[in-house]
Structure formats: structure tokens, C-alpha cells
Amino acid sequence: SQTIHQWPATLVQPVGSPLSLECTVEGTSNPNLYWYRQAAGRGLQLLFYSVGIGQISSEVPQNLSASRPQDRQFILSSKKLLLSDSGFYLCAWSVARPGEQYFGPGTRLTVT
Amino acid sequence: GENVEQHPSTLSVQEGDSAVIKCTYSDSASNYFPWYKQELGKGPQLIIDIRSNVGEKKDQRIAVTLNKTAKHFSLHITETQPEDSAVYFCAASVTGTASKLTFGTGTRLQVTL
Image 1 (tube, rainbow over the protein chains, first blue to last red):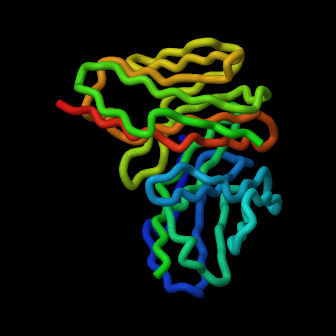
Image 2: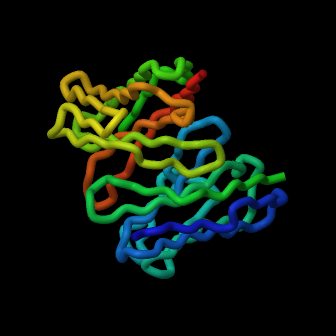
């Protein structure tokens, strides 16, 4: 069966510091991968998606970037964090049945 | 782009009662409508979905209905239990290479004893 991992689970970073969040999927190949951000008490905002290695599409212009160095690995990065980057970051994957997305456990990021 | 509105934002029901959450979408090309349940501190869990060629789908105590003409869909939970308490999100998508989901703003469901 397929599983998705995200780490770290929680992170506290000062303003201006770099960021690297990692997501990996097991048990499938060539998945679509997605990064979402969820602000406290709010809905999910799609940040990036990838339909293959090296193929990244950005949905919202901001100081974040994404990379997909391997088929089942998706990384979210920032060179300098802002206070507004605080939130719950979720990775999701999709394969086979069109549209169905399955989410990871998330990373809680607090920028201080 | 797609816009999904969800109501109500909060819903409190007594155990055993039914709960209904409604969503409307704007893009008539949308053809896939999932519902997610999110418990505190966890990632959303896909609980049921419906595609545009179907009007209703049931899975035990939960059901989803779709009205393509009116562009709205609803989640129905019957015989609610305390473990149904969570935030529920609807979403809409035009399935394709990327199949991006547009989410509603969520409904916090509280099932009281």
C-alpha cells in the first residue's frame, strides 16, 4: 500500500532563516505531488504541484520554491522566511484515479 | 479559476442527528468533487467523492449528492457520533494531467452527547 511521509513534524524558525521541508511517497511510482499551506482555522491553499521529475508549477507567487529531485520526493524551500510563512504545510499525492489526492501528516511551521 | 463556497462554517448537532454541509462551485467544467475530514493536527482524510456522471453516492452513514445544473453538492452524515466531530472540507476539480483541487473554507462539525 502507499504511504506518504513528511518531516519534520514541527518546526520553529526565526524570520530570515532558510527552510527545507521534505515529502516522500512509498508504494507507487510517477505520482503527481502537491504542496498546500493551511493557515490557522482556514482552508487549504495550493502552493506547488508536480506531474513529474523536474516539472514544478507554482500557483501562488511568494518567497517559497519547490523541487522534485526524485520521482517520489518533493521538497519545499525558502531562502528567507517571513512571519507570514507560518502555517501547516501539507504534501499530497495522486495517481491512478484522476483527481483523488491523499495527504501526508503535515508540518507545523512557526516563524518567530 | 474555480471558486468553491462552503456553508455553514460551524455546525453543532446532537449525537444521532443528521448533519448536512453544502458547497457551490463556479466552474461548469469541474467534474470531480471530493470531501475530506480533518482532525486536529492531522492531514485531511478523503472520506467520499463523487464524479459528474453520478448524482448520489453512499458509503455507510455518509452520502454525497451532486446537482450539476445548480452547481452545488452536499455531504450528508446520518446517525452522527462523537467521532464525527472534525473539520470537513469540500473541493472541486477538473480532472486532467494535474487535477488541481480547489477547496472550500471548511465546516467545523461538533457532535454533542
